[in-house]
Each structure stands twice: as C-alpha cells, then as structure tokens.
Length: 209
Image (tube, rainbow, N blue to C red; front, side):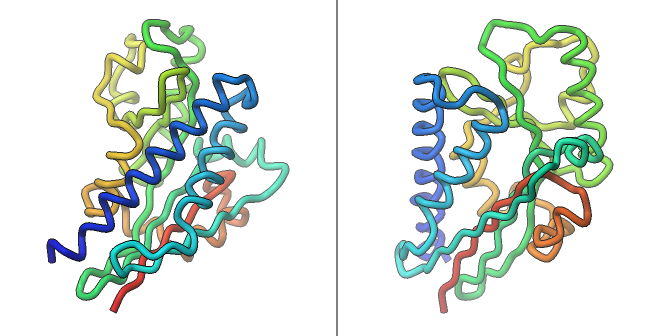
C-alpha cells in the first residue's frame, strides 16, 4: 500500500503551493477579505490538481458554489465544504470537512465580539459534524484550527495560541483518513445551496486501478 500512497505527499504539496500563492496575492492587496481569500485558495487548488496524473493516479477537481449566500452562510456557520473521493486500488474513501474562514495576524487578539461570533459559528458547524475547522488567514500563511477547540475556549482570543496545522499537512491527513466525516459526501456537496451547508465547496477525486 505504501507505493500507492505516494501521490498524497505530492498532492498535499500542491495544496501548500496554492496556499503560498494565495497569501502572496493577499500581501499584494489583491484579496481584500476572507471571502476573496477563500475563493482564491479554492481556485488555485483546483487549477493545481484538476486533470493531473501523479504516480499513476488521475486527479480531478470540481468547484461548487452559489451566489447571494450571505444569509445562508450564517445558518450553519460554514464558508467552505471540502470533500475527497479516493478509489486507488484497494483504498476507497469519500468524506469531507467544514470550514469557517477568519483573518487574524499572529500576536493580535480578536475583539471580544469577534471571538463570541466565531465561537457561535463553530458551534453551528459542530452541530453538523465534529470534523469542522477554522482556516486562519494571515500575511505569513494559512493554518487550520479545530472548531471544537475554539468552542471549548471562552477567553482565548488569539487563534495562534491553540493547536494548529498548516494547510498542506491538513490535506495530507485528510487524504490519509485522519481528518474527514463520511456524512459530508460528494452527494451533499452537490446540494450545498439546497442544504444551506456552506457557501462554496471543492470536490477532489483520485482514481487508479
């Protein structure tokens, strides 16, 4: 099984590269807000993965989104639903995760009102799935923090003081089944507007054998 897992390292590095390019655009002031950063990140991951063959595995990517979703995003607190579907020899899995985006620079605390709202958003996501996270955007990169950890904290307003992981490693763990909820499937992703689950989604698929 080890040989067929090699593509996960390379694909996760593509995600890391997409994150670096997104933050570079953010630093150049091309991406003014969280929504634009998320859109750029998802688009760059899509471009980097879709249609590529990596160690004999064919990868595809599909973006799903809908317009006018401001009020719907508040229903479950999620900005983004990520789903992976893998059929690689005898390795078969389909699962997803929910994400709320947040801008914060290291060493700068969120205001109390921002922290309270973020905890409320995490609570809404966790009602749907324990595999919910906050992607934190800053001028130095993108990290993922578990929504469950944020919700458990009442007075810690600095997300960088909490357990975190770089987005490339986050996706690597996602591919290896350490992150992801089987209830959050590609079928659900195709219904994000009807389900009001998130404002956008990204489906990554790997096929071999």
